[in-house]
Image (cartoon, rainbow, N blue to C red; front, side, top):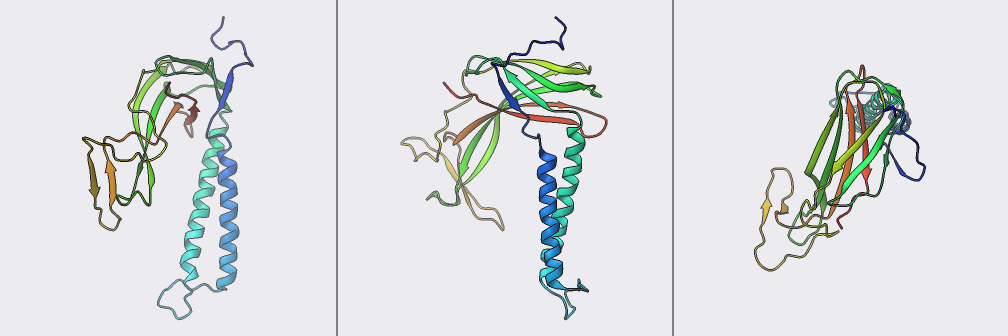
Length: 239
């Protein structure tokens, strides 16, 4: 059977690229930024004084500058995302629900033949999400993502519409997620308060289990223009 002619099985799960539709999202944000900037400019009035020592200077001018910067930034991201979307839609079709210690297998489908300038790279990554707090009481918590496991497969730089993917999953990548900051256990437990200038101190626990764990599959390839960079969240959970 030709490599690019794998049969379509509607019973399997399709996972879309997380970046699909990004151009529309960025375009909407650029439009909102432009509308907000226009409203600020109308409120400030013309001419707009930019010299802070000018008696006519309006503090809203600073906010207007930030709004304009965000508008142009979002517009640029919309253009880049739109150029990337011209490569076509990409989805990942799982053969079966993956389990720890088992095998992740499936097929990456591209909606049109794509010829990259270099190797195709498919990377499976696991991230632990740890929760940090601003003090020992656990208030002011925030999340931090750290990579704990990864494997990469490469493919020849040929025009493709499909790429078969198979990874052997580890039996474990560490303590199972708890879903929240676990209470301090009895026995050996190491924590540290980190003081950073201009920022609040943080409580860091080095041997506590993660709050959550996520797995992602990425497909990248260098192109003439924006590179292919597709991301797929995977439903892998500890047994």
